Amino acid sequence: MYSTKECAAFQPWHVILQVYMSPEETEPQDYEIYLRAPSPSDAQWTAYAVFNILEKLQQGLPKDAEYPDVADGRGSTAEAISEEEYMEAWKEAQHYPHVKGGMQENPSVFRFVRTGKYANAFANERQRKIISTASEMSETEAKVALDRMRKIDEKVKKSK
Image (cartoon, rainbow, N blue to C red; front, side, top):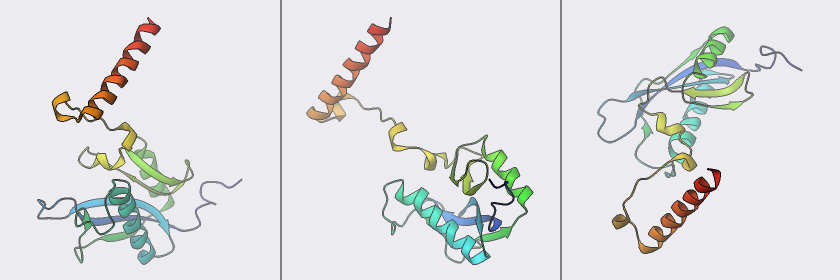
């Protein structure tokens, strides 16, 4: 059994990528990621990989999609931080939408969003809801939707 500090094999980093989230944005936005890596270069490459996973792969976009994308040569940074700062950031992340990789008590990488601006990046496909009217659906989609609603209604009636 290792303590939180003993399992930290690599230096903690706070990486801020400069990212264009849509074609309408003329200035890149800060995209913060906390992670562990052996060097600033590895920290930035890892952050770039995490960005591609969260914002492209998990959103169903191809890796070469034009948006969202990291801005070339626009001042992305990797700052070495202390164990205490890393753990404080992880503690703060618990209060916001966040994703993590690694152990719950000491993740090797995590990201959180203090505002709701890009919180949709953390949405799981199964949690998304699309509101449609019957006129916007195909006949097959409308039948499936009506069947689902009927099953929900039956379940509610049985529980009463």
